[in-house]
Image (cartoon, rainbow, N blue to C red; front, top):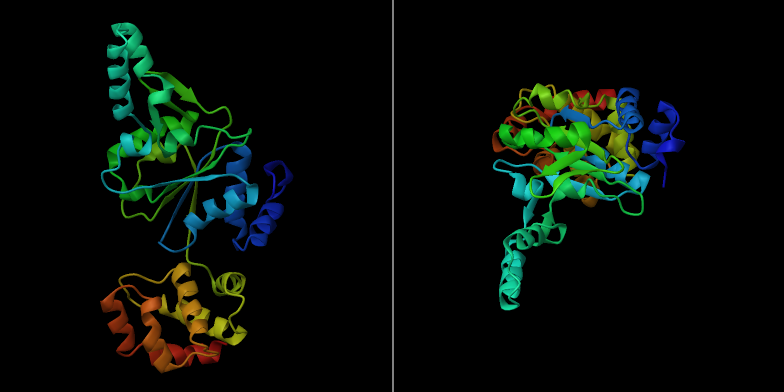
Length: 302
């Protein structure tokens, strides 16, 4: 387990992430380093499958902190993301007060809207510390949520606090580490971005992706690993609806290893494209003429 105070340089951050099998370039390591040192949220944008979500998971493991994940979706609201009142328990308490003949409006209201009846959702949970340790909060795929939901995040991301009308303002004693991700299916509002450090994660170059494959799939034959990475790199030059990310590269090589393959063949590529591409039209396009020339270029490259 690594402590933030022990990470004194960007190089140390990059090496520490590498020890947990997260291979990143210096610019991303710099963004993570600054987010930790300045206690600022980190907003990560990039195509799906390039490793944005994995950063939060690795940081939680590396720093020995709990991971709280808020998966965004259309229709996400305060009751799911921030808090809601336990109405069932409140009604039961009202019945108990009535049975005891102790119903006094002001006193009952204070009791019913006290912390014991508050159901804490991920954003409110993230403001708590356990044994003096703040969690890692992952707000994943924010672009899938409605624009209105972003307003709920502004107070959290700027001041690490949430206002509950019945209780007042709840503020974190120790700011959580916050990672916000977006696949850029829509633009996130500038007001939210201003509260964060920003980094764009692009598809990796050959050597970086090859290093990721070696770290994540050490059982893969070296030649197969180079061929797979070279093939994916070439495939990203094609006009496809959805280009494969690093996650798909890892899925593909894992499938090939499970099939005891030591090298790529045209037949095997065609049979296993479903592990790499996720749309029928993309698979058909590649199978109908792209596999053979790409394989020929790969053989020259490796």
